[in-house]
Length: 454
Image (cartoon, rainbow, N blue to C red; front, side):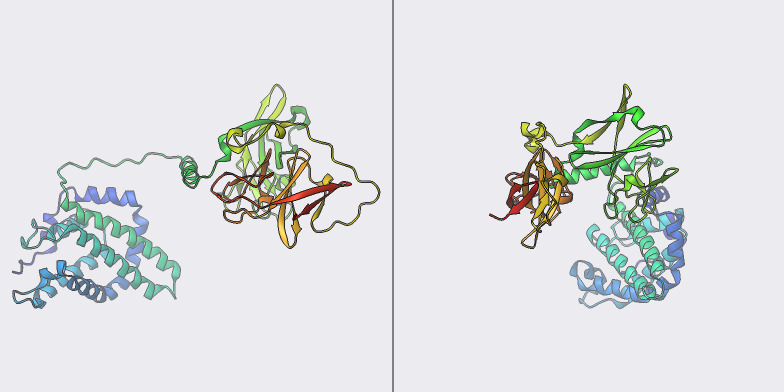
């Protein structure tokens, strides 16, 4: 039996009194604000144009599936077209009201009434639609509205399409929650919602740490060690000093009464950024002109991109920086890594040209990594306190270049995902890599190192 038609105000009067508060709380939580409401209002004529098509798609979908089709059948099993059209008129009015706004208490109570109408407590006690189908149909309409916006706007104004689609998607999340809340007990009053302040950088650090632990990565910043830079008097105000520890180049700045230490490697192409021009707080990389804010390390074009920075401490007139190091137990460092560097053999006479698989020992200092070519393949070469090792350059996990990684004692760390390998044996010391690296033999003769395949 068809229930009697009600005016919009009658429907609103049946909605829950706290519906407005509930709507506002959900809207705030998902980010649906005045700007999003304006974007929907801008798209109102597009949506109105498509309402007949949207309603058609909606009811074709409902009538296909027995759990929802049964509500629109006559006793003989045929479709009750009058009842379908009656319901269609309600749906048409609802989406017109939604497209035009405003999203006030009346609108919230209207949604609440619509949700109630899908249950036994609504105007028709014979209707009792399961919550899952209400959720499914809201998702269906969300997709249909996005398609309509795309058909009208994608070619002529893609920015408008994105803006309107985002606004509708957020509103549909709120609508879905409003519709299904009638299936739960909602007797308790809704308290005013407050928003607490949160440090997004802190949350991001936690998220990165959670990801790295999940894939077996080791976070280098878990352990830091203080390294001596020099006497404070060596770096007067306005000056800097470039230092290198275990293959890591760092620029230490005495700038505007503060001390800053940054990795001497531009985010763009690895240029020696710490040697660049400093004007005010702006440091310019000498290679391609990329500019950074020195106190924060942020790239001016994109503040989310930052140079690696290290804490600086002044202790009794001496300057120290704290650099990340690998825990010795996990990384397999040995006493050999802290032994004095062995002298590099000197060449006699004029330097001869190098073959592709050769390098000059004097150009690869202790703790540094180089790269050469062996039979057309890139090979990373390591100087561990005067002893030389060589591995395939490409990490067995995802192909990261080990020659651009960091060397900690006898352990190399891939710059892409943090996999660790023993440079002497190629063995995996920490994931996410699981396969060992291929090793090469390194021979030295007269100040020249040569990597051989056998």
